[in-house]
Amino acid sequence: MTSPPRRFLFVTWDGGGVVPPTLAIARMLVDAGHSVRVLADPTMEAEVLDAGCGFSPWTTAPHRTSREREADLLRDYAFTNRGKYLTSMMEEFLATPGPRWTADVLAELDAHPADAVVSDSMVPWGLIAAEARGLPRAMLSTTVYGVPTPGVTPMGAAMVNVPGMLVGLRDAGFRWLFGWLFNKALASVNAVREAHRLPRVEDFHDLARKSDRILVLTSPAFDYASQDVPANVKWVGAPLADPTWASRWTSPWPADDTRPLVLVGLSSTFQDQVPLLRNLVTALSALPVRAIVTRGPTVREGEVTGTDSVRVVESAPHAEIVPHAALVVTHCGHGTTLKALAAGVPLLCIPMGRDQDENAARVVQRGAGLKLAKAAAVEPLRAAVQRLLAEPCFREAAGRCAEAIRRAEGQSSALLELEEMVSTR
Image (cartoon, rainbow, N blue to C red):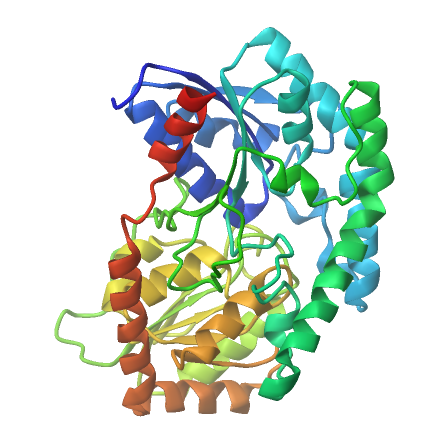
């Protein structure tokens, strides 16, 4: 242990890909001799305890009681208009429940005092509660850096291609749009802050900017970094461990089968991906490949069926399989994307929402993959797979990404950053 034992409260939610990297950081602290308690959805209890942490459930704030698709809090797949979904999400998940999120965190701090609070970027109310108690606080981003910052390509802009001379105008426009969207929750933020005798903020993202640390759980070699980011922003790398619920995998094919191995890994949460999975099975079955399709726990058994060459399973250990794969077909969730790039494996990116377009844009920009729409039919899917397997430039670019990620490792450590955050306060 590099510092005296401390007590950390992690404030998070069951957001699918959010869970494994968050608990990986929590486990690092536990292994270093610190005490960690996690305030989260009841559905996360077993994973939290397995990480060696104490657990407390949300009580009045929004939370899941089941991982079935019917219990989804954020149903982006039910909206045909992305703007309407984002407005709904801001109001129903973030702004209106703000007092309840904050009250639950404060009650937890009263019941289990902590020396510092680490709050997920989607639950910024933990930062307010920590500030009200005078505690060091860190915001945890389990994907690419998202706070609007001059010099950094903002969320939303990465999926828009414009001529070079217009990039500055594009980025400024998206920074304004992103700020305007999140400032829909500003009145709720300031009402909560005033209730706890904290000064008002002028911008929603000031909650992050005022925190002691913003820990970005990705590689700076993958993200759009900039010298203009504040000093409290630290890229600490992407924990690449599989979730604890991932099943073990034994290949059904003989060891001397030389057909390229394709791993298909779409979202672990429901994003209405059944039609896409069916199209992928059809596309891959007609090619000289072996394929593993992990349907995820929210796609029910029988909704997607495989073939002799395309095996469909609920889950499998991606971190174990990816190094042997010739191609990864993915929705471009951050964890799957980084596992593939860190292993030098090219990707077929099929984003379905959330941060996935941002991740896909970074893959395509680096030449490490291709991007298709979620509604892609069988023939375009098959053609993209054939091209990615046949043209060596994609694997070469993915190999360069892997080398860049390796070089960037060790530049900063979440463990050391959190320990230093507490000791310097």
